[in-house]
Image (tube, rainbow, N blue to C red; front, side):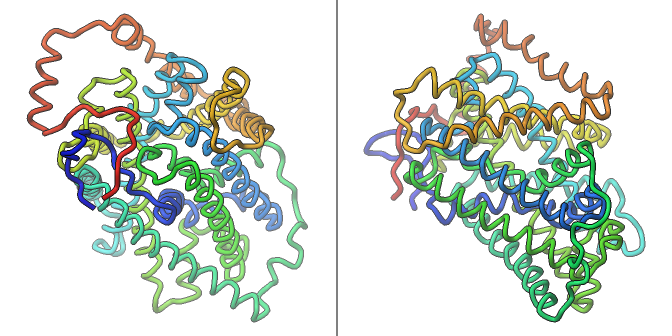
Length: 478
């Protein structure tokens, strides 16, 4: 594929390079991070060691994620613009809620997730060099910053490289999870079913515990909305988005259930919840001579998720700038690589800054409810648009009651932590979200201009070799 500027049409646009297989791999790459390797113990613990309830929660989390992804599929095929929730909230609920989302996601939520992934990658990759003790903080931070820079550079250079990298890492991750699942099936065939004989006996978790278990499970399914950030780069999005969502989510649910079953064929529920990294404990017990494969697989999984997360954040910055909510330089594309290089640079810089003060990461727990607030607002936007613009062309329409289900689940996951354990940090998170109004009113609503800002933009445009985009034009794959 030639990623050069189209000299015939003279248009600078994102190229449609993502087909069905790559779209499925993108969903896999983002979802299959660290969650399935570390969350099963937490879900089982919050399920009161009730194996049956635990597996039901995993299944329910997968189904809810698929329903949410199908709701997003309607929005993505109806409005084929990169930017995900930001664009849909702006269309359905107006510019102020959209700007609050953009502010929260770009400044804190998405960079914090990327930073956590980078630090976890650093933890797994540096630990072998420091046997018997923890890796020094300085080493982990340097490694985390390095991997963020590497991923950022790759995203700036070529979308094709990103797709190839995602496909490769996804195949490797699926191979690792497939091996764990296959071993579990073999163990079941050998009669290792003692943990499933009385799966639903024992204590039943209360509503509070079920809510917390759902948080852990939904964390492992996080990333099901990735295709909505790359709609402008998907071939035939009206067909490929719904098909990719269904295929990918069905496979992820099956993988997660089989992997959990595999863990329980080797470990007792008490052993599973006492393990800090259940996949590593499973490997030590099941394949001791090849146990090193699991930490390597976890590192590859984190790298793939980090890559996908950076890709998403860059497109979010790009879309926000195209709508006039961020500086115009961020919406420009590199004239030779046709990638949103300025948007990726901003994302990379914020991610690197977040690595330095580790105490900032403690706030990420209190921002987790914000992500579900944004999901709820997005599905409310879908419902509003159905009634406000009924004649709008919708290549794919989701069964509308499913959107109400997602709104209800989002409301529960937003309110549950605040009601269960009210803390001042939740107030700080909300205060941070609404502080965006201070920026929105003068610079977006009244379009206040900063002196010499246009000149700075011009110099940056020349320096970075970027050009404004031709909005909403379909690009051609050569």
